Image (cartoon, rainbow, N blue to C red; front, side, top):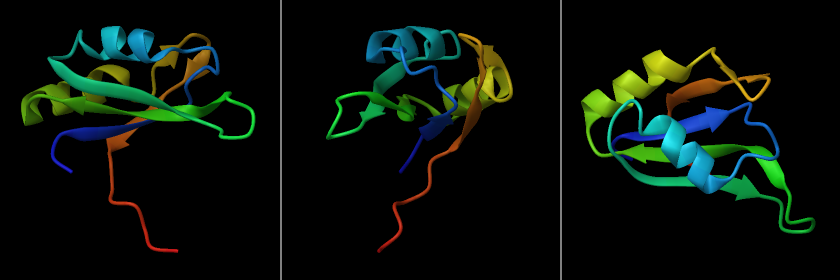
Length: 85
């Protein structure tokens, strides 16, 4: 999962476009998506951002990890592969 970030602590009202635009300040974003609950259609408060370069990914972590975003504290780290259940 090259250059993919996990972004936790997002306000529930955040849109994919807002997430993309915010992380674009750190470098080129190739994709940004917020995880949505199937039953309610509501945000789960986290998402994933894929940066075009490793440098952009490191810039994004430095810029956003532990910072306020819409009144909530973000947790930004390199995404890990999904574990088997």
